[in-house]
Image 1 (cartoon, rainbow, N blue to C red):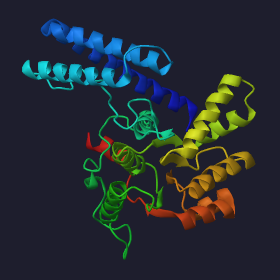
Image 2 (image 1 turned 180 degrees about the horizontal axis):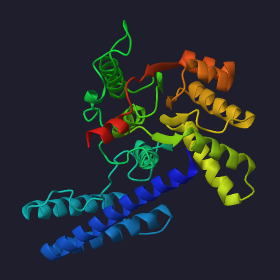
Image 3 (image 1 turned 30 degrees about the horizontal axis):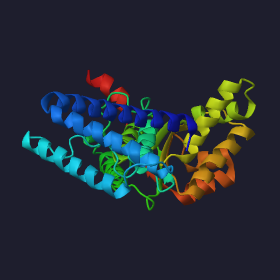
Image 4 (image 1 turned 45 degrees about the horizontal axis):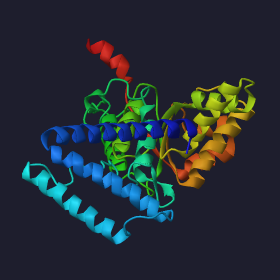
Length: 328
């Protein structure tokens, strides 16, 4: 797991623990005022615990069985008093939001699913550049911006084509998992590629998966800073970002083809995409390039990876931003 996000996830778990402790204290104060006898019972139980520790260390005192029987009697009396006053019998029990790890973040020697869930939430929190206005949902995708008239004889009309693309994206998000294919969105600017990427990101993140978003230029900048930066903090932040992009459940990469192309950036991009494929991690790429442009710009190795390991969805139509201006 990426250290910076894991630290934030642990901080979130600590906030949960602190909130639970505050609630426990509030309940004790409430019961002490409402049922004074219970305060005495709690004090005796703490004294018995001290005696038990002393016995375990070889000290003298009453036998463990006698202490156990008295503890059980005190606990039964406490439960009876709580019940008589309309409280649940476990009202004063320790509060844990996760019964598996008891809010420690670890269960059976492994990271607990509660901490993993918080970690993925931290990953998703960084989707702000993609989820700009909160309207990026499948239901909000406007097919009326796409013409019912084919561009050429024998072709499907853009609206018909985009209805299929929308259905594929919705089904893909609903069934997100190990068997999901990688996706590549191709088409001219302003046809809804980023919008549907955001709708998928929102739906997948709501399932609890870790989703990350970046432009290809931003991704390659992180690779370059990790490799070449002489600023320690900048290099460390870049390395953390690269680990996040390599390990998240779903990575959405925007604007393939707009970055400056060098031997280093092409190698970094191939390394990322190949590593995610080998790890079984899912990726969605958006580009204005067609298949021939990609092969010419990135070479046979990357083009072959994209052609063989990604499902291509072509976006057709007229620039939606231009249409909106016309409709004003």
